[in-house]
Image (cartoon, rainbow, N blue to C red; front, side, top):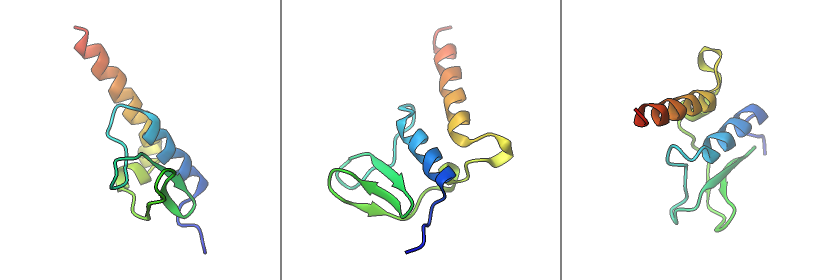
Length: 83
């Protein structure tokens, strides 16, 4: 089977999943999914998913990986909340 995700996409998805600021991609049981070359998988129940939202998948739009943009937004929101 040919991989459907590149190593860069896998890395980006897993970084997004670990940010903790946005709701992660989950299985039907609410477990957080992990990215691998064949798509997303639940390490607990074995659920698989081949679809990933473009906003997460398109990891280098405008030269800045989306997980870095999300992290910057999360940091900005925390700073604003302190005002």
